[in-house]
Length: 167
Image 1 (cartoon, helix red, strand yellow):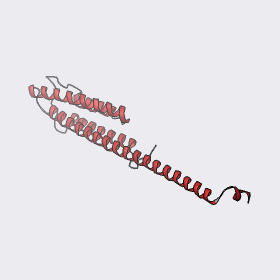
Image 2 (cartoon, rainbow, N blue to C red; image 1 turned 180 degrees about the vertical axis):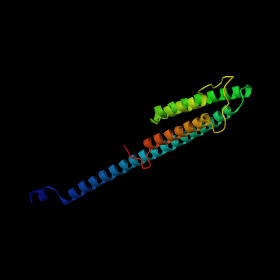
Image 3 (cartoon, rainbow, N blue to C red; image 1 turned 30 degrees about the horizontal axis):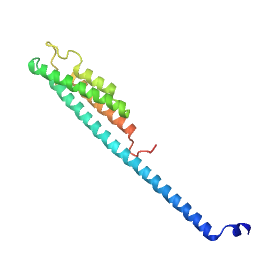
Image 4 (tube, helix red, strand yellow; image 1 turned 135 degrees about the vertical axis):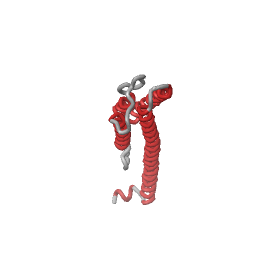
């Protein structure tokens, strides 16, 4: 009874309305924050996915160039191709390092193995042995390219699972 006499019904109603407004505002602000986080994560995932796809395409282009190089006779054309392979390999290695630093997707060992498969042995040597179709050299280049793709995909899926979780 004492409480009823001290606080009127209008005061209780006013307090409840104010509390309702505060809770509603908090829910709206929190909802915006969650929606923003999800949108940012989705956008980042898409951006990294596109970058990973570009790296995979570059690796398979290098695989193709490597196969072509090892199947051709030494000479001016193969020298130009060797220079192109070195340049593209350097660019791909740099991109993989950036991906590792930015997103913790590690394909550095796989890119090293691809480099060894393509440029190892007697690469860019005048008296090099020409590979035969189906040779171990060409198979190693293909396997290294596939391993590179696999490492990129695995790293991407670790960093960006199908059902992203908010942190």
